[in-house]
Amino acid sequence: MKKNVSFLSSDEVTRIHAVQWIPAGQPKAVVQLIHGMCEYIERYDDFANFLRENGFLVVGHDHLGHGQSVNSIEDWGYITENSPARALVRDIHHLRVLTQKRYPGIPYFMLGHSMGSYLLRRYLTHKGEGLAGAIIVGTGSESDTKTRVGLTLVRALARSKGWHYRAESLQEMTYNSAYKAFDTTNTDPENSWICSDPEIMKTYFADARCGFLFTTSGFEALLSTVLFDNQKRNIERVPKTLPILITSGEKDPVGGLGKGVKTAYQQYVKAGITDIDCVLYPDARHEILNEPNKEIVYNDIMEWINGHMA
Image (cartoon, rainbow, N blue to C red; front, side):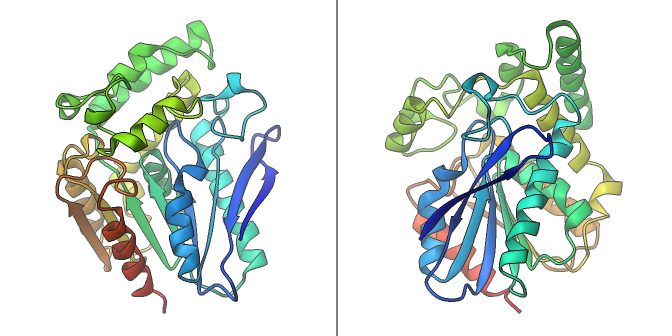
């Protein structure tokens, strides 16, 4: 069964749209999904139903500025003016609290993809205690210097143009050399860096809820979180016994074609995380949950979750 729910965002203005995929009988565990930039939670319907059919309760929500968590479509890509990254993380925790009240005492996992992976990594530094495991999908690592330059530009534009301002230059700034072999204009579904399945990309391009231009507020949330995640002092706050799976495609430019994924993995290893795995899928691009080999990915993730149910 699929059920829509809502709750008031930490911005105290917006109703957050959330979804529950409820299995028959008592769920054996909860998996909370955290979606990426410029998309929405119901793009994960296929994966969520796979988990539901295997006995898991799956929950997830549209971030502020995404999907149905807006007061108007003009707010797509806009988070909030006041600490937008913290607002996103608070909403993630709010959904966890609501879900655990309804389903107490069963293992609770979180899975974050892309921007959601960075938000999950940030979340783990504050609220990782009590989780049965974290699955970090489609993540990467950027130098502090590059990220700070980006934040300086974002904040300068916000001061002069406002936090709703949209600039193509900010979008282009995120495309480093790893993207050069792929289409970055959302016009070539055969060669998209997002996914190698052209039918998935045709649907993505045709959906107004996907691929819109982020605002300065959105980029502030994203880049400040990327910077936060890369700090040694923050990584060391993640619970040492928390099981973590980091997984991406080897052809994912967000992860530097695997290099940035391995960097993130090594940061956790050096921080003393005792149960951590890193899996890279050959030839897979950014959205491994939508790639042609997605059934393998689905089963690998479920097997990892089942192995950490105790």
